[in-house]
Image 1 (cartoon, rainbow, N blue to C red):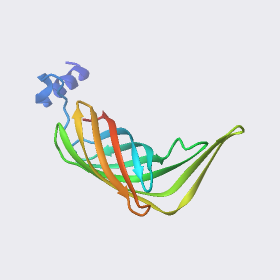
Image 2: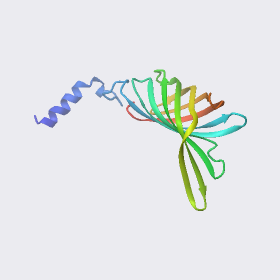
Image 3: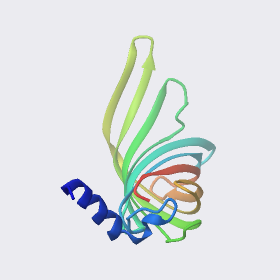
Image 4: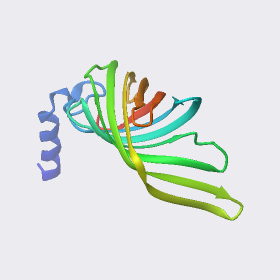
Length: 172
């Protein structure tokens, strides 16, 4: 028996779930890549639209270190402000419904100005850190998830609410 055939037979025999439909030789606790986009609203004095995107690695099926890019009032004329923050998220281990929560910290903002002469972007240290926290829930639909969360940015005295769409791209 050739080395390749022997390796294939060994792989099949070492994975008892191989015969099950859609089964893979992976532990549910293997790392998974999560990609998410969210839209929502922020309120300090007036209701303002928000958008964000997140990429993270789900470790041990409950803890997800992430990077989030977010903007409050992203379509406010020719200027918009964006923040990048590190975020630590956690979720329960449910297979259909999961409770979620997260804490994020950003130390800089990016301003983008569009004019007839082009786009001017600058990154500056924030006057005060952009600290956020939220609680929510998500429903898993195969590799996809849909969720909602509510939280706030206490240093900016803002409430944040969002609807989230995501995918578990690798792992899961």
